[in-house]
Amino acid sequence: MLEARGLFKYYGSVPALRNVSFHIGPGQVLGYLGPNGSGKSTTVKLLTGILEPTRGQVLFSGKNIHDDLVSYRKRLGYVPEEANLYGYMTGEEYLEMVGTFREMPSPVLSQRVDGLLELFSLTSQRSVPMSSYSKGMRQKILLIAALMDDPEILILDEPLSGLDAVSSLIFRYLIQGLCSKGKAIFIAPTYSKSWKRLYATAHFAKRGSYCARVYRRSATADRAGLPLRISSCRWWRKKMFCGSQTILWT
Image (tube, rainbow, N blue to C red; front, side, top):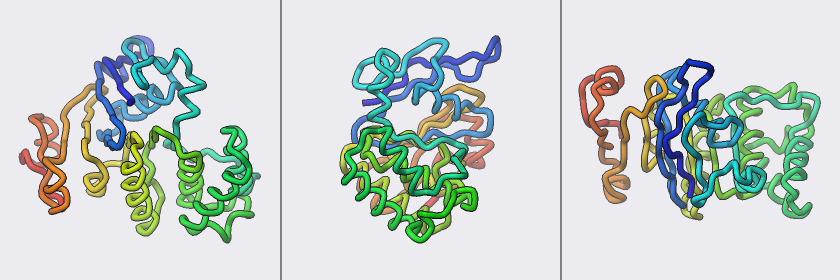
């Protein structure tokens, strides 16, 4: 469904991304992990069409997204790294604005906003200006805005940032439900143990280059909570996994 093919991105002569490729099919979640400066946010901006690659292509259903970027974005739900919202607007007003831009029918828009605000425990704050929202509340608004039009693709840059434990759990169950509906999901998270509960496949990046891939061995192993296995990568084994080739998180 969504494919990155040989992506390179240079800012002048400085490489931000070098030869990154992956594919996300319907019902799949791909986690894209790495330290600061590894090119995660640049990759996100390429996938959303905010930036164009220096070389390579981002393909949706086999077609370059820049051939018809407007149509592609209508099928896309996006949570940016920074929660830059209009502080003078209420949460409800902001979501209604987003739904209007996405040409959602009014009854559907109202129903989705009501349901998602209730799910994320924001109903009582719906008419409060977002300037008074906490970081976690602003993050919930961004998640709702990305989800409410039922997009085919979700691209999420650090979606758990600022969320409390309950909201993080709700998010995890939402992702599982969206996968069962055939959505393609790309997540670039803050590095944490919680990532392994979300992804069937995880790609690791270092200094803008593909470094390693982690995958679940089988659905049975996943249900049993068995370890994930990582492909060979000396740097990641040494720095992140203390020399082990197997991630033992449960």
